[in-house]
Length: 203
Ligand SMILES: [Zn+2]
Image (tube, rainbow, N blue to C red; front, side):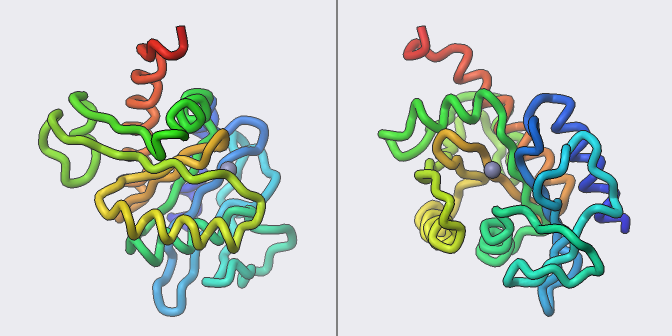
């Protein structure tokens, strides 16, 4: 229940910043590893109004194991893939204006390269602004099993990445804990907006 309350609180904060508008985005956190149990946001719910009791419990096949009606987020399979491949304790996914713009602007380069910013030090393991963070961009799809496979491939190719973008769709990041995942989203959203606002290509 503490995990559910934490997710609801993060959802409210992100919604207030305009990163989860119109029921978009989703959030999850690991409740138990063996067998895997994830607290997952339900599909189609206003994230500004999300209540702890609305968080679903799902298994590693994205099936609901709690006594809830309704449907887990369509993107649950991506969360499960990230939890397994990155040993993450929480996965957060936002649909901000700036992450959407940059996910398209840099698509031909395969990702966004971020370096030289002090805020990079908010990413786990980064100690200097001289760090280069590469956020891979994955082509969007509604075929979730195929997209989950692509996410797995991308995470494997970019072991150092703290997140990735789905083209014209949104940002994914994660952390060992919910607090770390939240910090990573805040850092990456800050950096993407900063790069977006200073981007000559947008003039
Ligand atoms: Zn999404």
